[in-house]
Length: 173
Image 1 (cartoon, helix red, strand yellow):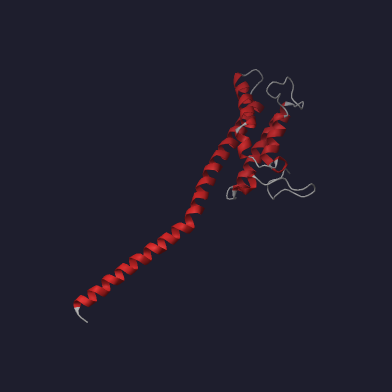
Image 2 (tube, helix red, strand yellow):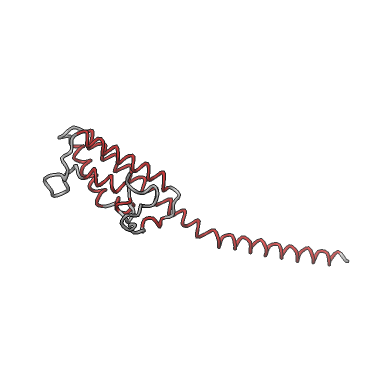
Protein backbone atom coordinates (compact mmCIF):
# COMPACT_ATOMS: atom_id res chain seq x y z
CA UNK A 1 0.00 0.00 0.00
CA UNK A 2 1.41 3.33 -1.00
CA UNK A 3 1.73 6.36 1.21
CA UNK A 4 -0.98 8.13 -0.79
CA UNK A 5 -3.40 5.22 -0.31
CA UNK A 6 -2.73 5.20 3.45
CA UNK A 7 -3.31 8.95 3.58
CA UNK A 8 -6.60 8.56 1.67
CA UNK A 9 -7.77 5.85 4.10
CA UNK A 10 -6.82 7.98 7.12
CA UNK A 11 -8.62 10.99 5.60
CA UNK A 12 -11.68 8.81 4.96
CA UNK A 13 -11.65 7.52 8.53
CA UNK A 14 -11.29 11.10 9.77
CA UNK A 15 -14.42 12.12 7.84
CA UNK A 16 -16.35 9.09 9.11
CA UNK A 17 -15.29 9.84 12.72
CA UNK A 18 -16.39 13.49 12.38
CA UNK A 19 -19.74 12.42 10.93
CA UNK A 20 -20.19 9.88 13.73
CA UNK A 21 -19.32 12.49 16.40
CA UNK A 22 -21.75 14.98 14.85
CA UNK A 23 -24.50 12.34 14.73
CA UNK A 24 -23.98 11.37 18.38
CA UNK A 25 -23.93 15.05 19.43
CA UNK A 26 -27.11 15.71 17.44
CA UNK A 27 -28.80 12.71 18.98
CA UNK A 28 -27.72 13.86 22.47
CA UNK A 29 -29.08 17.39 21.93
CA UNK A 30 -32.31 16.06 20.44
CA UNK A 31 -32.94 13.86 23.49
CA UNK A 32 -31.76 16.22 26.25
CA UNK A 33 -32.97 19.62 25.00
CA UNK A 34 -36.65 19.21 25.99
CA UNK A 35 -35.66 18.09 29.49
CA UNK A 36 -33.22 20.99 29.78
CA UNK A 37 -35.89 23.50 28.72
CA UNK A 38 -38.34 22.02 31.22
CA UNK A 39 -35.76 22.26 34.01
CA UNK A 40 -35.07 25.90 33.09
CA UNK A 41 -38.80 26.65 33.18
CA UNK A 42 -39.28 24.83 36.49
CA UNK A 43 -36.36 26.73 38.00
CA UNK A 44 -37.90 30.03 36.96
CA UNK A 45 -41.28 28.94 38.31
CA UNK A 46 -39.86 27.84 41.68
CA UNK A 47 -37.75 30.98 41.97
CA UNK A 48 -40.95 33.02 41.63
CA UNK A 49 -42.89 30.71 43.91
CA UNK A 50 -40.25 30.93 46.60
CA UNK A 51 -40.14 34.74 46.32
CA UNK A 52 -43.94 34.91 46.67
CA UNK A 53 -43.82 32.54 49.65
CA UNK A 54 -41.22 34.70 51.37
CA UNK A 55 -43.23 37.85 50.60
CA UNK A 56 -46.45 36.32 51.95
CA UNK A 57 -44.76 35.03 55.07
CA UNK A 58 -43.07 38.38 55.65
CA UNK A 59 -46.35 40.28 55.20
CA UNK A 60 -48.10 37.93 57.63
CA UNK A 61 -45.32 38.21 60.21
CA UNK A 62 -45.36 42.00 60.00
CA UNK A 63 -49.13 42.03 60.48
CA UNK A 64 -48.78 39.67 63.44
CA UNK A 65 -45.99 41.60 65.15
CA UNK A 66 -46.40 45.31 64.39
CA UNK A 67 -48.54 47.37 66.76
CA UNK A 68 -51.99 48.58 65.71
CA UNK A 69 -51.86 51.95 64.00
CA UNK A 70 -48.34 51.45 62.65
CA UNK A 71 -48.33 52.56 58.98
CA UNK A 72 -46.05 49.61 58.13
CA UNK A 73 -48.74 47.25 59.38
CA UNK A 74 -51.24 48.82 56.99
CA UNK A 75 -48.73 48.38 54.14
CA UNK A 76 -48.24 44.74 55.15
CA UNK A 77 -52.01 44.13 55.12
CA UNK A 78 -52.22 45.61 51.62
CA UNK A 79 -49.27 43.47 50.52
CA UNK A 80 -50.89 40.33 51.96
CA UNK A 81 -54.11 40.92 50.02
CA UNK A 82 -52.17 41.81 46.87
CA UNK A 83 -50.37 38.47 47.08
CA UNK A 84 -53.52 36.59 48.12
CA UNK A 85 -55.59 37.77 45.14
CA UNK A 86 -52.77 37.78 42.60
CA UNK A 87 -49.36 36.12 42.48
CA UNK A 88 -50.10 33.40 45.04
CA UNK A 89 -52.96 32.13 42.87
CA UNK A 90 -50.46 31.49 40.09
CA UNK A 91 -48.18 29.31 42.21
CA UNK A 92 -50.82 27.42 44.19
CA UNK A 93 -52.20 24.05 43.14
CA UNK A 94 -55.51 23.88 41.29
CA UNK A 95 -57.02 21.93 44.16
CA UNK A 96 -57.20 24.50 46.95
CA UNK A 97 -58.07 21.95 49.64
CA UNK A 98 -54.89 20.00 48.81
CA UNK A 99 -52.57 23.00 48.92
CA UNK A 100 -51.11 23.64 52.37
CA UNK A 101 -50.02 27.15 51.48
CA UNK A 102 -53.43 28.08 50.05
CA UNK A 103 -55.09 26.79 53.23
CA UNK A 104 -52.68 28.74 55.44
CA UNK A 105 -53.27 31.90 53.39
CA UNK A 106 -57.03 31.43 53.77
CA UNK A 107 -56.70 30.88 57.53
CA UNK A 108 -54.51 33.95 57.99
CA UNK A 109 -56.71 36.07 55.71
CA UNK A 110 -59.75 35.14 57.79
CA UNK A 111 -58.28 37.27 60.58
CA UNK A 112 -58.24 40.35 58.35
CA UNK A 113 -61.10 42.28 56.82
CA UNK A 114 -61.02 41.64 53.09
CA UNK A 115 -60.58 44.70 50.90
CA UNK A 116 -63.88 46.56 50.94
CA UNK A 117 -65.17 44.71 54.02
CA UNK A 118 -65.46 46.19 57.48
CA UNK A 119 -64.96 43.04 59.59
CA UNK A 120 -62.81 39.93 59.33
CA UNK A 121 -64.43 36.51 59.00
CA UNK A 122 -62.79 35.33 62.26
CA UNK A 123 -62.33 37.28 65.47
CA UNK A 124 -58.61 36.75 65.99
CA UNK A 125 -56.50 37.56 69.00
CA UNK A 126 -52.90 38.74 68.80
CA UNK A 127 -51.89 35.14 69.55
CA UNK A 128 -54.10 33.87 66.67
CA UNK A 129 -52.31 36.23 64.28
CA UNK A 130 -48.91 35.00 65.43
CA UNK A 131 -49.93 31.32 65.27
CA UNK A 132 -51.48 31.67 61.81
CA UNK A 133 -48.44 33.58 60.56
CA UNK A 134 -46.23 30.81 61.92
CA UNK A 135 -48.42 28.18 60.23
CA UNK A 136 -48.16 30.05 56.92
CA UNK A 137 -44.38 30.12 57.16
CA UNK A 138 -44.25 26.41 57.97
CA UNK A 139 -46.62 25.59 55.10
CA UNK A 140 -44.41 27.51 52.67
CA UNK A 141 -41.30 25.77 53.96
CA UNK A 142 -42.94 22.35 53.78
CA UNK A 143 -44.22 22.85 50.24
CA UNK A 144 -40.83 24.09 49.08
CA UNK A 145 -39.29 20.97 50.61
CA UNK A 146 -41.74 18.51 49.07
CA UNK A 147 -42.08 20.05 45.62
CA UNK A 148 -38.64 21.37 44.71
CA UNK A 149 -37.95 18.67 42.11
CA UNK A 150 -41.51 17.85 41.17
CA UNK A 151 -42.95 18.13 37.70
CA UNK A 152 -45.45 20.96 37.28
CA UNK A 153 -48.41 18.68 36.52
CA UNK A 154 -49.53 18.96 40.15
CA UNK A 155 -50.55 22.56 39.47
CA UNK A 156 -53.36 21.45 37.18
CA UNK A 157 -54.44 18.26 38.93
CA UNK A 158 -58.09 18.32 40.00
CA UNK A 159 -59.13 17.65 43.56
CA UNK A 160 -59.35 13.98 44.44
CA UNK A 161 -62.84 12.54 44.81
CA UNK A 162 -64.47 13.04 48.20
CA UNK A 163 -62.99 10.70 50.78
CA UNK A 164 -59.72 10.20 48.90
CA UNK A 165 -56.56 11.86 50.21
CA UNK A 166 -54.61 14.53 48.43
CA UNK A 167 -51.23 13.69 46.99
CA UNK A 168 -48.62 13.10 49.64
CA UNK A 169 -47.16 16.25 51.11
CA UNK A 170 -49.81 18.54 49.66
CA UNK A 171 -52.77 18.24 51.99
CA UNK A 172 -53.34 20.35 55.06
CA UNK A 173 -52.45 18.35 58.15
